[in-house]
Amino acid sequence: MKSTISLCIIALVLLMLSCDDRNTAHLAPEYLYDAGNQMVIKSIINNKKGTISMLYGNELALQAASDSLSKPNIGAHYTLVTWKQKPMPQWYGTNMNGDIYSIEHLKVVQRNEARFAFDYDFQSEKGYQPGDDRPEKEERIKFITSQRAAVFP
Image (cartoon, rainbow, N blue to C red):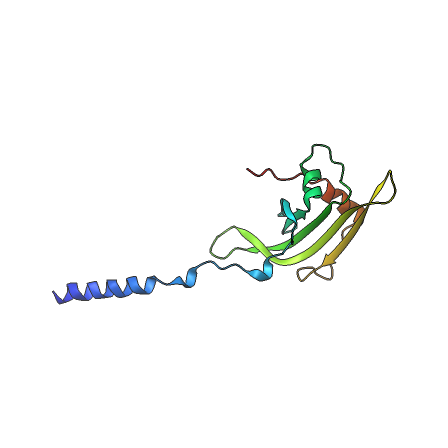
């Protein structure tokens, strides 16, 4: 009888100790980016470079990314945020966003009545290493404006 009571007490103690909220998930605000009033256009994962990117844009940028014709709209504002990947704790083989690598801003502006131009800005962040190559401006402009919007249900 004493052994049965002892086993029940041990089982109860183990049960009480296992009910702990220390393993709950918490957001890591240092890895988030506030895009303000811009909307998500698309996410991009590049496993070769070990990066995760999110393309944000205003209404005109989203409209241009949703059209089948890839002509940028004057007044469109794009923001491409790139994070370095890091392993996700407690999920083997899965990566999540780590330190922000870079933030790229692109605005489509009107230069004259018939033409438009691009104002591009590249900002390196905490994840950017001194030996990393800076992307070519024209190549990045073409990359950002050629992205098609993800289809949301």
